Image (tube, rainbow, N blue to C red):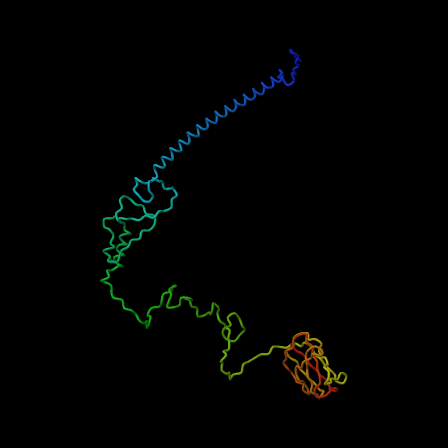
Length: 330
């Protein structure tokens, strides 16, 4: 729509409110009012809750005031009227009680043992049971026994200190009483040593055999000691014929390349008529073990390790006649 005015002026209606735009504004305003109503409702609910909270706080303040009224003004022990009342728990453990007076008013139940101190006066008159208290036959018997066993100190005979016991007429009773200084091993068994019966006389060894060590200052023994030599096992044997394998003074001749086990003894016979030597060690590193006499040395104890090389070499002159025989034993 175009409006004309006088004098001539053309006005544009673009951007002016229309009926459609007014309806939209009304809708927005209505929605805003609804939200404001919701806000007012929430504020009212909040005020109600705040009132409830204030009421509870008033109750708390009242309770605190009551508690504060029951708390003593000062700490420490005081009279009942100035103290706070308490209740002992049903599972409270035992509490120690100290009596300040020997007089107890009312009835007392004792769970446990009461120890009475009779003091230094052991006169039975001081220990007599109260005649005004009803007692059964067992207490009467106990009272009689106490009066019989306990005597006044004035009637006791003097005790004489025994310096030494010269004889015991009656046998000692059995039991576990400690006698003298036998506190570490009170029970004594003469038939055993360290809980084992020792072996007696000649026989084989066993758990009851006693070990014996010769002292370093033992005097000479005129009686010969008996030794038994155990059997020997042959390790190997050798025979060397000098006519086919002579032995000179210059070079070692191998007899055994390597012993099968340790050698403790060998038996030697030689008919070369020469003096020779037996050596051990690798080739070119032989060392003399013994000198072999003409005719042989018989049995010779040695100590040769297993896997040892054994050789022979002449000392006096070349051995080229006769033979050499050796038995090696372990």
